[in-house]
Image (cartoon, rainbow, N blue to C red; front, side, top):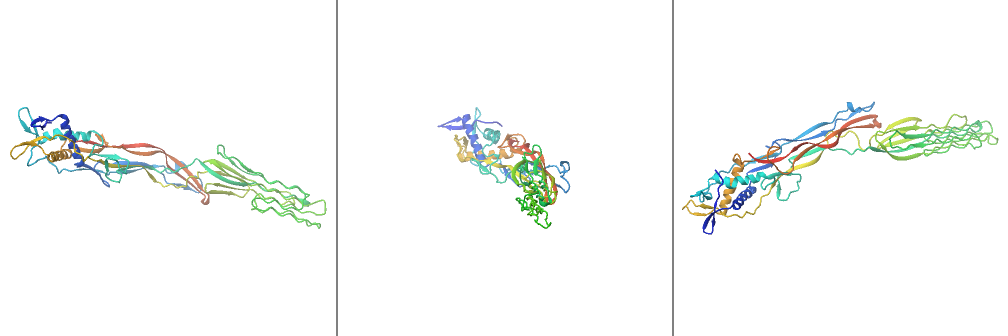
Length: 487
């Protein structure tokens, strides 16, 4: 069959329609289809006829633990990939229509050069219906067709098919991990020894305590100089000087009966306090010893690079002469995040600054939604096109007249629904990533492209931990496009 040029009534004469007038009727066919399409898409929970599309994302490995040392990256479980499949778009064909027939009116008439003839159903389809379907499938998002969008709050001129997304792109929920940690500290050196008094000798100074960062740590050294040792005579059996943490040692007893006593040691918990001065004969030239000096506590907070090493040196109290009380040893308390390191015994210690912006373990699969994709249909127009009515004949009496508006609309709607849903070559079909015109936004599946190895030490449990989690930037793994075509 072939496209025909239908006749119209021009006053009292019959004339062939112009191409513009035929196009208007074709557009009316497309408009009517948009209001009642015979090929529709729905959103289902699973098993949609348009097939499966996949969302992939990296997930973390399981955390490793040890009571002896930090698990190495090689022995810590690697990140891996998980895949979520979506099959939510289902195509439905309404096959209830057949070629249009009417008991009263014929198909439109055309002039074959000699006679007036009635269009066959195929002529009618070639003239109005097939060109309308070409328009519906030839350009994206025509009225009555379906498309993909990222909004679920409504799009002007369209209808949201379902608030359930047909596809969701997810990625691992990356934590905020800082490259620095705040370190708060207090440190004090050892207290000085008291003077010997009658027993003679100047007390020894306490040694300094310090906290020093490794190269590139960003930590500025904090030092508390040890308390000074007291002179050996000229005092009054003086008590040692108190520190921030407590009193110094008591002074020795003075006596004229050779019962002089040494100064007392500073209490062990009075970190940095001085020892007491030794006793003497108060009325002789050998007066009691002075009290040992106290060290000065240093405090502060610094931002330190993660992975840096802090070296903590705890000084000892002054000691070793007769008669003077020993100074108390030094002390340090270092807090990294919520982890507290406390040192009360002279010596050298090290701390590795761990990241305080996270706590292991992280959830193995912790997805975050990047983009949801929704199915919409473009709304049709309620306003008919302006076109001349084609001439037909009445089957009763064989009279020529204009085909009534309601009748031509019924013919157009019936035939375009029939051809769009059932006739090979004009059957409208949607697909994912096949041939045809892209309908709306492409759906992208993205995934992080790297991983990071994290460690943590829990002092309260003497436990070393390590875990690998996703990291890096997002890269596109797959792109899925909804397309419309004719089959």
